Image (cartoon, rainbow over all chains, first blue to last red; front, side):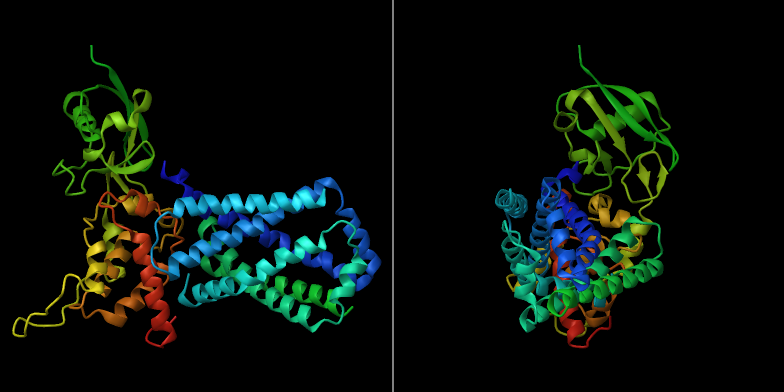
Length: 110
Length: 109
Length: 240
């Protein structure tokens, strides 16, 4: 099935990560907006995010952001630079790099 | 997608590439163990740099996300192109408003 | 004793169903051989298309185990793991009957993308001298061997999700013409491929490039169109 090819998966991951980030962003902005009420409100929210489960979710978000960025760069390169081979390997590498960055994030916060 | 939407989406994407890299670095810095709200806000308060950086980021992200959402809706939902476009505009405005408020929150409040 | 293949073939129109047949396996058998066997020895009412049966005409394209391919160039041994085959008509096109699809939408979009040569000279003028190694000619030659088989169109998810999308083949042909020095289509053709459903709808999934039996690269051609239309738009030569 061509639908399982690395580049097709890359495009799907790009789209799904974008959707997830789009849903997350308003929540992110609302959280930061707590500072309008008081620094204490923001502080208690930040302490709420110290929970392991939330930290895991944040790791997931870091992954989504990185993978969406790298996938977007893939598209920009295809569309604006000369054709290059080895794209499947690059796409797989991008996913790996994103996972590593998310992993480093989690390692630092735990 | 029309020519104009395409260009806006690609342009905001290119603009955000370096912005996101900086943001990832900020995320790593701000989530160090022991960082409090006070630590963060004391660094962002009254900062023209942070206001400009995140202001730009919010604007670009609102446009980019709205166009992306429009594409997904036209391809994956039964909505007409017009309705999808309308939804996307509302969504983009929402992001811009909430984002501007968030920037205000950390820089000025 | 020859092994038997279990072959599911799509029968009927859009609301049809798969029916299963038993076909004797033979050495060097192609999927087209299998379909032909069913029609000749089991069920003469089976409808399907083929012509050259040697991989130069593109008529026999069908969906084989989920992937669009030329059935005359697909060896059964390569695709029928565990002795099973599922064969259906090409996707993204209306089904006429069984394994034959209506190619009209495919060619209508060809026209919409202005994949038609626009002459610039008459017979009374001197013949253009085209160097085969000029960059433009090389670019055109790399994309020109399309025989309209429809495999890329059937494989493309963007075609599936977006009814207006012209598809890889039509856009690739427009690209070859834009690189043809003799062609006078110019800005009008750029405007056509920049329309809704044009090159900007491509998400670079690259299924087309992966599956094209002629090893063409529509993704690259469409990327070229994106660059050309952007430049033309920024210069005011075409409108959004």
